[in-house]
Amino acid sequence: MAELLGPRLYSCYNCRNHVSYHDDVISKAFQGRNGRAFLFSHAMNIVVGPKENRQLMTGLHTVADISCKDCREVLGWKYERAFEESQKYKEGKFILEKSKIIKENW
Image (tube, rainbow, N blue to C red; front, side, top):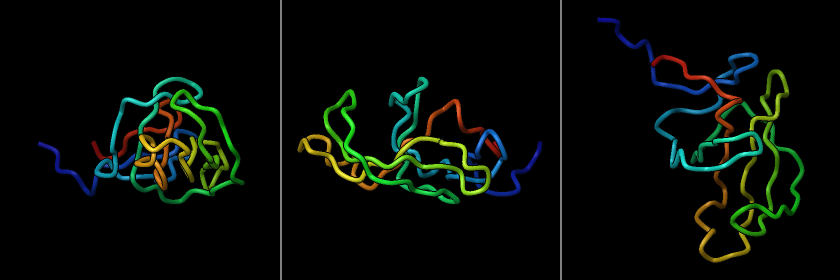
């Protein structure tokens, strides 16, 4: 039986830079620009772009695109502000698109 060398991670599909831990997944039931997406409590090795208001499926939010720190591939976005009370739990959280990340140490 193979032993894991470290924690289960998600990495940028383009350059394999580590961007989040599996333990930081809050939900796998989100929709991104290109299909399914995961909501994470934390992300690492990313660059947060400028904030902008966007009308998403769940209402108006202030978001900032997030990119891989190494290759600059856009991986998803960070929720900066939710205008509807029922969506406030997303503030400060990160969306990573499933098509833009790969599993490591699984």
